[in-house]
Length: 269
Image (cartoon, rainbow, N blue to C red; front, side, top):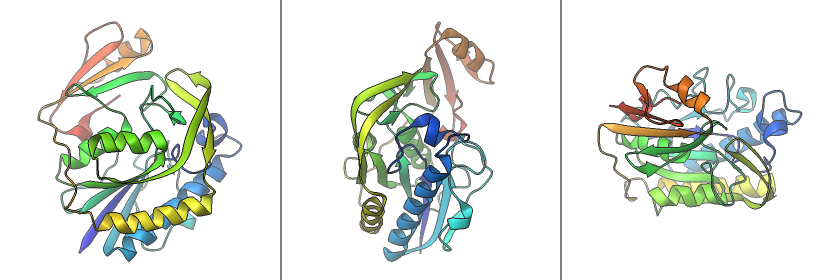
């Protein structure tokens, strides 16, 4: 029996190109973005069920409750991990057969990332054991930490390439492509973009999710040695000082902190 966990975000969803209007909870088009994200999740759920999954769980990882997914529109066969905040996926363990990344964005500084950032607009760079990572890499590492492979990613072109940097044979769906930069907010970059129509993207997600189910156990996963060393570079010293107040976080430079963790999921910004 295949058991699947889906990590959801909103910046990598089709048609989502404006951070203030679509990704912030008080934005004029936030409800539209949440609806689009939910429809993409439903398409993915349909694909993994067609591919043989028997249990499907999804964590809505964007912002605070309800986290960027509309529970009223949710596929009836999907269980939603709710009220868990956006600090990282919860409720997963080695009983899962695979993890899927849906609607992900590329890390801060990506060349053509549509809404590229790393966790918050105040973080410039994050390294895990000297490997530069964003949210894609952290999720892959967190699930690898308990022996769960990542087999699928959807998002903008840069997000898919970022995932392939860790897992070359990952099943990827590109739903939009970045053009020239529009503006930056801290380390978050907003770009003009070309996007697929939602229905086209949902169809692609459904079919590729089904294909990804066949790759479970067939794709080589990255390895990260324990303990896990996380170095974070912030855009201003005040953010590094604030971060260093958290337990186990040390300030090692004007803009930089270091934390050593036994579990990837214990990493904090």
